[in-house]
Image 1: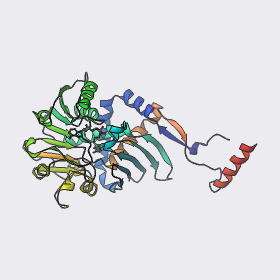
Image 2: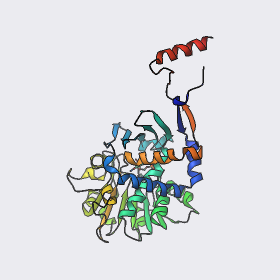
Image 3: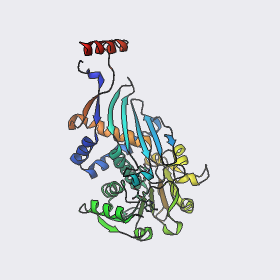
Image 4: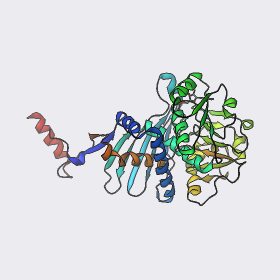
Length: 352
Ligand SMILES: NC(=O)c1ccc[n+]([C@@H]2O[C@H](COP(=O)([O-])OP(=O)(O)OC[C@H]3O[C@@H](n4cnc5c(N)ncnc54)[C@H](O)[C@@H]3O)[C@@H](O)[C@H]2O)c1
């Protein structure tokens, strides 16, 4: 067999190489840089192709495809959400994704995205909080201490200047793990035994739990005026975290309304309940937080443009980092119309 041609090869970023890249750049710096990339793409929001993600639901979870394009580059992510996986020793969320050249349709890069999703989700949350949270917020409650939690805590430190994290999880082992991983990283970490305790003195609360039901992680009486809520875990039909009454008291900010109305906390509200698109706040077309007493809610579900930004960030560092392998992924016959001939020649070469 002859070696694959240049057109056949697609750079692939493995989990091993992604970890090397993150450790080389530094996790906090990378999330701050991702937040800036995502913010820059939110400023270009109108020119992106946008569609609610394509979801395939089952009794136990969901598998989703998240495509978008800016006209020059196309990207998609494959991601699952299976809250019951943890009991089987598997993760709730795993992902991989691809960038392609719109001009030719040829892939530019294939990448692991389980780590990259945690990084981009935390970067998006912190970027949204930069626009919406009360000025000078220093204390964040972190409810749900699973896979995403440390990334959230460190992104809020890097982007928003959070100094104290107050942890709570229904499973104390998750809180122990999270506190251990955050030790020595410049945050004051307080482990709590209830969500109420975690909320004490918190100006920001992040909910990042996984349960396939209408859960009530926060009740109305737990949320005082002026708080910013970063609701990450409610991201599927029938899977929410906040009591409806909190939503009715909050200024609600979303990524892409047609997707969030299906998947976000606002699935609990009327279909025409007013919400503000985050990109409009960033672009100066809509107000963010209007006063110090307002409760702001970022009803995050995760949108394709955030993954696109993250993939482009990784792609832009391929050449300098060298942290990829080439995959023989695209069949590349010498004569583009002679795909069958390529197969025949390979057969002949094998037989020889
Ligand atoms: N919005 C987004 O962009 C986005 C991105 C990634 C993940 N998510 C969602 O975030 C959630 C968390 O993801 P993960 O990968 O960290 O999951 P995970 O399974 O690793 O962790 C979830 C944690 O929530 C805890 N928990 C469950 N019910 C709780 C409750 N009532 N009170 C307190 N803690 C509770 C569990 O014990 C677990 O430790 C998932 O629902 C996932 O779908 C959203």
